[in-house]
Length: 204
Image 1 (cartoon, rainbow, N blue to C red):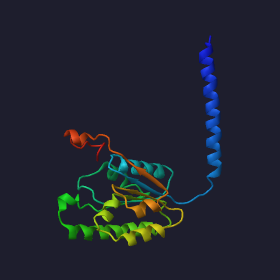
Image 2: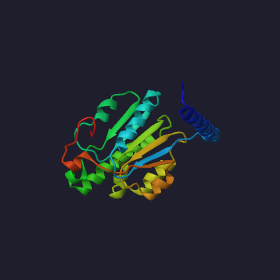
Image 3: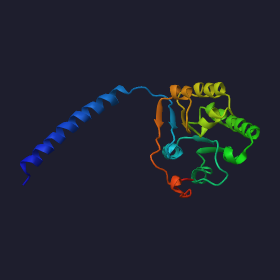
């Protein structure tokens, strides 16, 4: 037999959930705008690219055509590239010069960044591409490898229903101001700080 305190708690829970449902239903009813989103995943914490590729997987699951451009990545094989590079719904481009502290050649990095950005511009101009992931793009602007105005113009002039996901630390104010959704991923603890090496499937 249900005790009186438990019964009262259940009643309070039901009323709270009814209020919550009413609030959520009201918000859903107001959300009538249908448009391509600009999503920015920034901050020093782990998980920005992982979250972005999760959205890519979700998009592919819905049969949407997608494009991926990866900047500032190491030369080793990454799991996301192995998974998506041969998928007919995904066009995949990688700068593949390695990290900047490995190349140590600013001029070569700029040349590679510009060439890779040209691929991004083609995706951003293609109305058949539903989702564009610009992985680690923020560094290209922070380091001055790409012209910020050129990047902002391409983002502003993309097809109206095209979604774009940008990842990387220190997203610029202009990118954040333009975005529809911004997540700042915080760093509480990282295994690497305890001298644990990068793990396959978790870190790459």
